[in-house]
Length: 74
Image 1 (tube, helix red, strand yellow):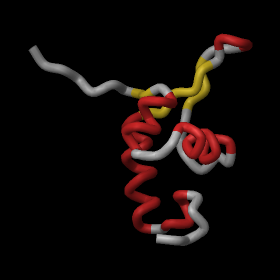
Image 2 (cartoon, one colour; image 1 turned 30 degrees about the vertical axis):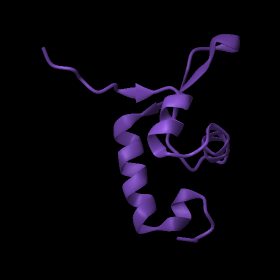
Image 3 (cartoon, rainbow, N blue to C red; image 1 turned 120 degrees about the horizontal axis):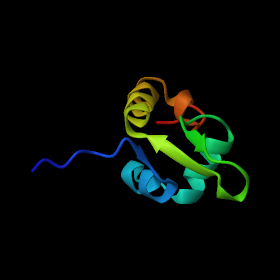
């Protein structure tokens, strides 16, 4: 039996995976700095963070800290 990694993470999972607070994740999401997908409509809308997109974003942010939303600080 093989266990496959999830295609996307819910906000708390994504924050934990990135070792940041859920509040910081939401700030990055709100500012459009981190990749996410909004699914559903109305009160049932949820935000998902595709794992491959997070990997790509994290790699790019490590090369250019301004992409991580930290003002260029390392």
